[in-house]
Length: 382
Image (cartoon, rainbow, N blue to C red; front, side):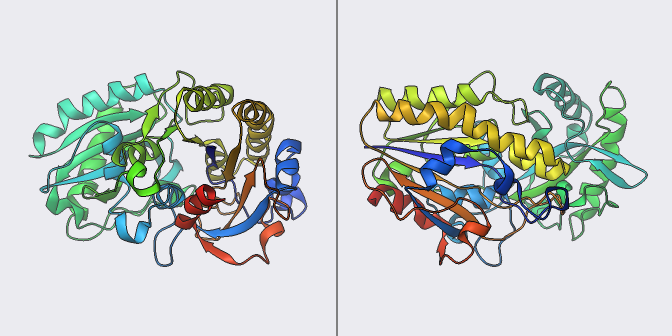
């Protein structure tokens, strides 16, 4: 038996006025997914435990079968793990976005979407010019606008706002005992960014936390697993849990990511011996943050035509399989940020048909709520 988990990041939504009160999942043309849902089990999952901030760190940890209420210590330390770093007890990790702030307003939380090479040059300059001023500070390059900073343990005591929560709004600088030094560092970064021909004009620090202790995926679930993603956050969960993290050149974390490449690496790794593979695509989430209705619909349709349409025949050629598909949270186009709303899921077995249903927000509204971290067990048990 082979298993696949598909994560269209942030694809769940609220009714959209431009879509006549429907959601992107309602209107996207997804015939392959519709056929799968018609013979599957569809339901409603709480991927964000009550009281926790709705984010991809919490949601993806839940999807991979680890209760975030037990194992989550912050977003940034997961991303730092993906960069090959293990934090000491006296260190705190921060997410370090490249952003555009003008006249006190968060114009673009993604800093104009710089390439990883462009961002790495900025991070090198930050390390050279700002790190020496603060003992224990180190900047780490990630993917595109998504980078990281390591700081002394005491810096964790700050109240930081995710930049995507501030899109188009007046910025809220960090508060708390460490808020002052973080705000100073963010302001000082403007002089560094001024030396580059990029839209991004400063850094934004947030998502801080200590090193998490995530158990082994194989020991927890009894199967050998791998994943593909362009997002360090998701990579980090894989690294911390001992999954095989696969890279492909065309994985960008943006609208232009290589859907076919992610499909093909999943099939190749399953054929080579892995039992379970996670395919993560960020595009729907980025479209939600941007308020881009057309791109969110298009990203869903790309899942159907560029991943599922080829993935299912490939799985059929290997024998029996099961597939679980769900987002890690909702990113409504109308709010342009994450919410903790329950999300739809579809669980299909190639051998045993389920009752069938519709994979959309309205299609599962009457279904009982399932804790998200329990779905891997349901996938493996059938």
